[in-house]
Each structure stands twice: as C-alpha cells, then as structure tokens.
Image (cartoon, rainbow, N blue to C red; front, top):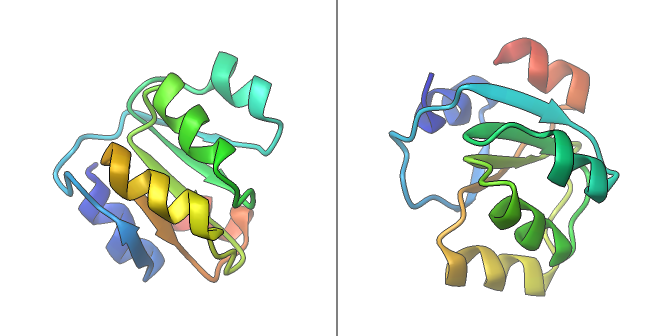
Length: 104
C-alpha cells in the first residue's frame, strides 16, 4: 500500500506530502512518544492525536512514512512548519484512530 492509498481511504486533508508513492509496510497507533520511537516500524503509518512539533521529531527519528492526525486534530503552527521543512508526509482525518485503522 502507498501513502496515496491511505489518503484516499481516509478522505484525508493533506498537511504535507512529499512522496505519495512511498510504500507503507506497517502501522502504529499511539501517543506516548517514546513508545512510538522504539516500537513503530520504519516505513509505517502512525495514527495519533498529538499535534505539536514533537510529532515531527518522532516521525523523523522512527523513519515513519506517514503520520495521520486523527479526530480532526489540527497540527499546531510549529508542527506544520516542521513537516514542510523536513519533507514529512502528514495528513488529517476526521475519523477516530480505530475507524481510521479499519479503513486502511
């Protein structure tokens, strides 16, 4: 599956997409950032409701392919800026985490 597939499946709004064809090989749900860093597989999609600039740092450290901000969570100004500066793939869905995962 690719990032483009996830965007369509979740009817998501794009914050930043650098590589819509990047392959996704797994997923992780969670908001405890140290767990995401240590347990999310590289090239995965991360479902979260966190919305501050630490999300960009975690996405970079864990080599996460795509971050999905769930429940209509909007990124704060610094997170949007960091996602664009670092070329991170990030989207927003109105769906809750469970519903989003089921659609993907």
